[in-house]
Length: 342
Ligand code: SF4
Ligand code: SF4
Image (cartoon, rainbow, N blue to C red):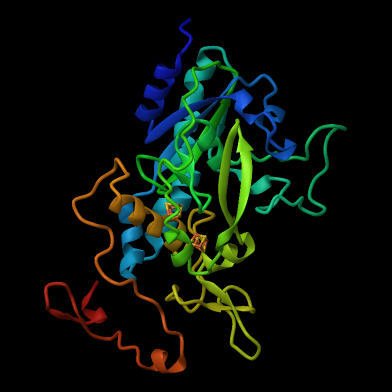
């Protein structure tokens, strides 16, 4: 039986649909909190394989133009996470298990985790099965896994930035007993120059410019801006909290549409989690523009992503009353009414 080496695994991962792939040895998770330690999931694990799945720049286009919001949430978010990525990690695990080594395919499946986005235990949710064990489910931090496998660096925005796509990918991993040659870890500062475009353009000001989180990951000092996760959790759906006396109903009673949502009510989720009306305006779009303008990314384009001032929504009664959607000119200059379109 042939035991696959790192090159064979990486070639197979790309053939099966990953856009970039890196490998980390399990000792790089030494010191991880128990609730985020892959060794509690697979005690005999030797390696983690991390794969990046690109979010198409085209999937952000419709939001940038302000005309087509669903594609990012569907094809750039939920569809990659719950449809495309699982197929790649499942098929790559077959290669590993056929060689006699256990492998866990992990797309994005943190819905059952015992801790919330802020690392706090979910109340009345689950209990450890035995003393000394973490609470089910342990959650592997995918961006940090990407970093520890050499895919890229953690930017100020806490996004994983890769040399291929910057912040524009989702991460899937495999935990395996197979020992593989690890990739070098990227030096912090290789891609993120602290330009703070992510901070300036986040529609909820969710990323702090001054307060940071510092952690030691496999001997490397890594720092990112403090993120207001709770606020991001509703702002990214296009919501803003109502003030006293204001009408709500965007996503529950206490929320109204914010300045980057054109929707009266939050549209339904696509592929389970896709509800990113904000189109990752700060942490992805602004960062990508910054990295592209500095020539940092391998995935290059003929034209710049942004060629006009970004739009914003005015939700005042006067602005709503002034809406004139009935007739418009299409890009050829021919007037079109919605009733003319099938
Ligand atoms: S926008 Fe600038 S500061 Fe923020 S993560 Fe990207 S490169 Fe770093
Ligand atoms: S997802 Fe949107 S709201 Fe959340 S940090 Fe990124 S840009 Fe800000």
